[in-house]
Image 1 (spheres, rainbow, N blue to C red):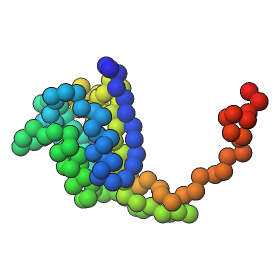
Image 2 (image 1 turned 180 degrees about the horizontal axis):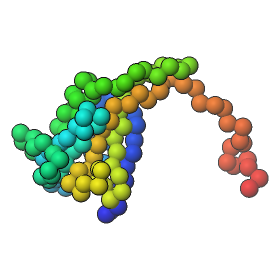
Image 3 (image 1 turned 60 degrees about the horizontal axis):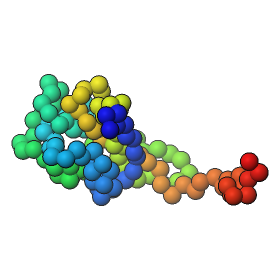
Image 4 (image 1 turned 90 degrees about the vertical axis):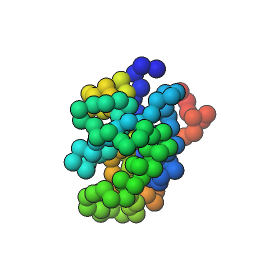
Length: 134
């Protein structure tokens, strides 16, 4: 698929590893990264003027571990104040054509986020699909 676009927010290193595994074209390795001032961690398939070269080419599993370590030290900003609990999480994404910031060598970005947890969803007033008149 030439027009891969992805955006997921979640928590946990294992979920990050699973999500990042969806980016893996066969045989490709992660060769570089950038941090955009600590706001996001961007991974690269190939050399880019924006990237810092990794000491060795990484698999996506290794890159996910690298990202999890980076997230442990990332600035999440102030914790949101709301009726519910917060947990430190992440957003993994790529934009149109599988790029990040229009750089065709950048394939994935990780951002620290506060996904809200333990918030009850509003009950639906809509009947189940099989009972709807339309």
